Length: 288
Length: 259
Ligand SMILES: [Zn+2]
Image (cartoon, rainbow over all chains, first blue to last red; front, top):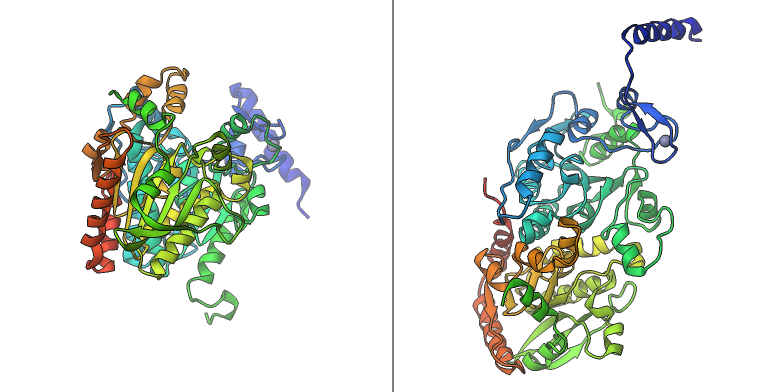
């Protein structure tokens, strides 16, 4: 049994300090249950609502920290930046503000990493950078990730979050769907493993390319995953979509994802899947 | 014609749709229905015919001509079973060493409930992947509208051509205008920004050829298409398949590799 006063003492200390500094902790309201949670508490809880389990969006660096072995992530082409190829109105400003908001140079980070000791290539899309929309740089970095994994014979573990193709790059963003799919296919044809985790939201051109091309497709609870966005569908069919349409659970029901992967056990699930493909024996049979 | 006029021309009433191209270019065409999984999608016509005597597989998006036909074809917006039928026929073409010719004309893959329930994203993604390594030559021609991923799912090819008054875009100019300026009426401006005309796309290296539309009944256009398609297929007849696939990969790999 844990002595009660242990918690009590810690609590009192914390409360005491808060009062002294008149510190007001910023909070975030859960869209599912409406409960407010302190931002720091949310962060400690992997950006998951402690009341109902709602998975908030998580930035790419935080994900790498959660999934990859400590300090194992070595980023490739880290500073690659988009240019306004079509001279599209307001795009330069959009790129500037997205960089400032996310602290990233583009909508995905890619690198070599280890997960539970299994070497792999990881890509993680960034929700704060134009909701991970796919332009030429996102397409290029993901393609290079698969090409590197092919060259080194490594599996790929990827996390998608995307509003779709990046309109501001016109047809060149559409071409990224073909480009990335080609790279996934070559990696796959070499007998290599690709695990993808769909996170909220994954839609449009990313869903219609590498998000749906994994050997194993996992999805975070409640994530919106679809080709057409819900609003576009509602405008087309002129009625409201039923609750839960295009959620991860809906996709599971319809046979399009292998499993729902809550953040708390996600790293372990990935390690198990990587181990099952590594040719190594399960730990209990291993001679130490 | 400015970009917006091209958009209007590509969608114009009375513009020939895929079936007319098929009748104008190929002989002995036999339509083959169904995806062997769920159903038969009227928005995509597939079959085998002859191009100057050579058997080829033809896959085309058909918008329909009469009102009744348009409804039966869902105005050329495919559902997943349409893309799966296309893939089935491409695999069949690969087995029998037939070249594949795709005619693209869609405002986009259908954004409906059933489409989502049956995996629209997956269906398109599988086509992109499989077309990239399909072991036979593939040529795609945009004949009207090339709407986003729904068009690309028939255009991962050795060469992509466009009719003079066709368009190819990641988003409709209306959609772009409403996102960008919250004003769907600014279609003309959006059409220009998107660089969706055949001339623009040729300049950007996204397509290899523009087919002139010199006459109203398209007779000359069909003749030109027939000649060029035949030549494109002949040119690839003796190319080793691995070389063909490497070139196809590079064709798409080059977009946006600028650093
Ligand atoms: Zn909650």
